[in-house]
Image 1 (tube, rainbow, N blue to C red):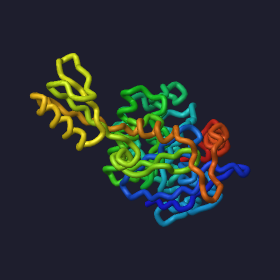
Image 2 (cartoon, helix red, strand yellow):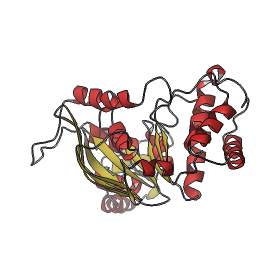
Image 3 (cartoon, rainbow, N blue to C red):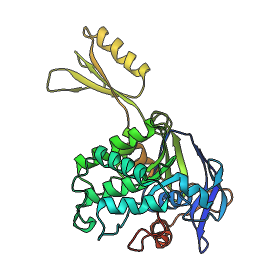
Length: 326
C-alpha cells in the first residue's frame, strides 16, 4: 500500500526528515511516534501529498504521493482541523461528498452510518456551536466521505475526553477490520500501543526504532523478573506480606534464586515479569544523543526541528478553514 524510500525533507537547508525508509501493508494500522520536532507531521503530510519531498520516493498504491488522483483514495485528518462553522454537520459532510462526486443517496447513507458509529448527536447544529469532541467526530466523518483506501490520522484523539477518545480508538480498529489502511500518530503512546500493528519511532528526523511493539521492546527495552521467595536470599528485600523480593534480569538468574531459596529451606512463591511499555522505550530512545551519520546530513537542533516540523509545512493547511485538506 505505502512504500517510502530515502525520504528527505529540508527547509532552507535544515533537514526535518532524514532518509526515512518504510512500508505499510494493506489493512494495517501503522504508528508514527516521536517527540515534538521529530519529523512526524512532515512525514504524514508528505504521505498525504501536501508536502513535496526534497529527495526520495513516496508511493501510495499505484500512485506517487504527489499525484492528484491519489487523493481520491485518501482520507486525511490533520491534528488541527478547522471546520466551516456556519454549516451544520450534515450540510458540511454533504458539501465534501459533492467535492468527491459521491452520489447524494450514497453520501447520506455513508455519513449517517459513520456518525451513528461515532455516536454524534445534534447533527443539524451549527459546527461553531459544537464541542471539540463533536467537531473531531465530524472531521473523522469527513475523512471517510469518499470511502478511501488509506487514512492518515495525525493525533486523532488530541485534546478529547477519555470517552470520546475511546470511541475514536475503537473506530480506528474497525476501519482496519474493514480493510482500510491507517497511518496513525499520537503523543499518547498507550493509544499507539493499543491500536497499531507496527510502529516506527522517530527522533530528530530519523527513524530510530521500528517493528511490532513486542519487537521494539525486545530490541530496545529491558525485561526484568521479580522473584518472591519464602526465605531471605542474597540481594532480596523483605515485603509487607512476609516474602522476600529480588529483581533479576534473565531466567538464569531466576533459576539461581530458586536454587538458593530451596537450599535455605524455602522456595519461590511467585514470579512476575515486568516488560517495558512503549512509553518506557520511547523515553529511553528519545533521551539518547543523536547518532552520527556517515553522510553528515543528520540534525541535532531540537528547537529548530520543532519549528520546522510543526511550522513551515503547517502554513500549507492551517489557514482557518479546510482548503488544502481532505
